[in-house]
Length: 135
Ligand SMILES: [Zn+2]
Ligand SMILES: [Zn+2]
Image 1 (tube, rainbow, N blue to C red):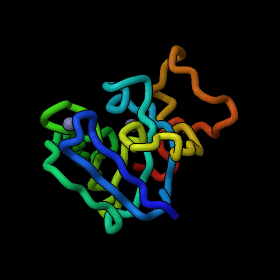
Image 2: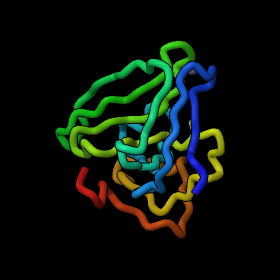
Image 3: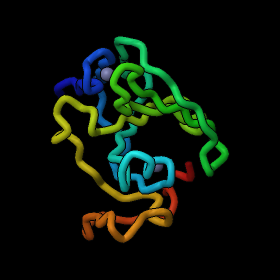
Image 4: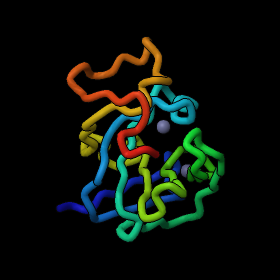
């Protein structure tokens, strides 16, 4: 398997991981909605994740009660990945920051309860009102 690599828009923060995602999907929760109608996310094991450069973290409480820390580049502002206290061994990578976003294969849409009609999702993907994993 080829290592996944990605970076922010300006390239000062880069990351890589050599593991297949345990989850790939679109999230329409209110927090992901800040950037767009949804966020394309890949959940990967934290042990396989390496970062170079120094992202800035924005910490918030999610609806689930978990503490979520979103990493973004302090130079260009690109969202890169997130860490959730509910999944301490995992990293949620924003698939749009991959060097090759075409490797992202969404399998479902989560948090459709907070999605919007204008954010039209692929009808063939399974939909979940919240998260099937109970995040
Ligand atoms: Zn940057
Ligand atoms: Zn979300």
